[in-house]
Length: 298
Image 1 (cartoon, helix red, strand yellow):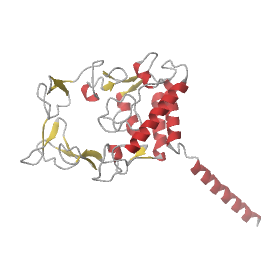
Image 2: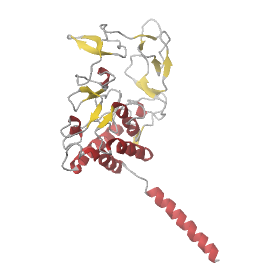
Image 3: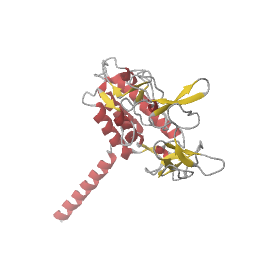
Image 4: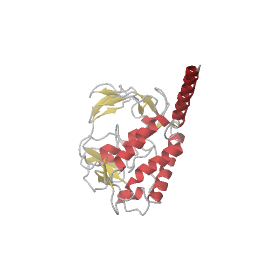
């Protein structure tokens, strides 16, 4: 009897411990997540010369909450806070902003597996294959991209990307032409992958090759020109050379290798009280200087 009672007591304790573990999952809601994210980002407060991290945290919490609201209320409106994905984001922020960080490289800010990518997944989408989307993070399947329903169409849907060689048909949603080619629509034949434009050629309706950027010339013209070097003016990351691939809005929209922190650094302004708030979803928000929960990449 005594042994049986002991077993019952141990079982009850185990169940209670299990319930406690479930109830104490980290970052159970957006508020706790944004608080933790702000604290992790503001480890650079002393590097930036702030007198206190508190004002930085208030600023970054505001940015995080604005991004969370944006993720849930724009585009296809399918994204919801996903607690299970929050710890990976907080870990990544701690890893990049901790240890007296003075620099975060572009590759850690933008692209697959980057800070932006990991933290975007905190707000998971539920759009199924062929359902409307505004960014790939609207899609439930992590293998899907948010792509035009047909070449040149403004309507976007979730679909898996499929590589297509030059000269091959690309009319299906998800078709991705090889590097330095594009999907050329036609009114008489099926859309086909064709060569992109070279330096000096018009890019008003056709993209440039990857080493070039499309620059406005005159009132209405657009011409392919070489990408620009570090500290040169830019509009998006696509304007910058690989050595300085980040179009940094805090530095006045110039190409930089990434974010730089230090006393008086322009990039510190995004963390200071009243600093720039960067929000928005979609793959063209490439001038976002600090990876946010609903920011996107190019």
